[in-house]
Amino acid sequence: MRERPVVSVFGSNDLSDAPETEVICEELGKAIVDLGCKVACGGLGGSMTAVCRGARSSDGYQSGDTIGILPMDDADAANPYVDVVIPTDLGLFRNMLVARAGDACIAIRGGSGTLSEIAFAWQINKPVAAMSSTGGWSGELAGSALDHRRKDVVADLANVDDAVTWLKDVLGL
Image 1 (cartoon, one colour):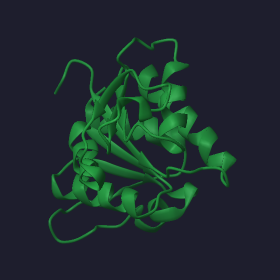
Image 2 (cartoon, one colour):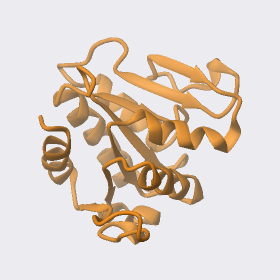
Image 3 (cartoon, helix red, strand yellow):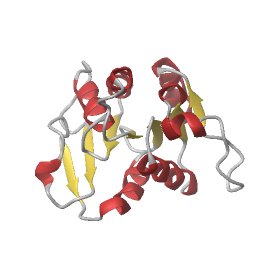
Image 4 (cartoon, one colour):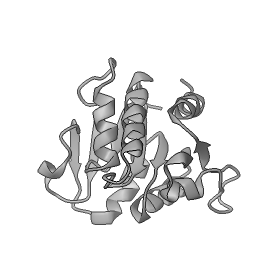
């Protein structure tokens, strides 16, 4: 494992109808950096902006702690809280890179893009969890095995405190 583990966060690109989920994303980003980890995400809006903003609010924040893996080749499209911008020009195929970047992966809410990231993380044997209280695919898949490939389940995280406990366990912090 890296000196500073990376936690990939998957989630909705638009949270305009879910201010409570935006708060959870910010709290999660802060908690991840408080644990001494970095955050990777898709680098755009909604949950990605909120988790990066939260990461930057941590007293432990260092430049380089927020990583945005963009679907387009325009680095300027990244949200303003991303430190390391990786423009891929891969479109939705970048979702595999977001899953691959994390030593552990957490989904919040989410539509079909988040669903693909959860599936990629599952298939490449990453520890994967979902914030069940936020709905979307996260609510649907939390506590479930996606298929026969693994003996575990997508960990069900009810809140940020559960996420911290889970990350400490799976990352050995």
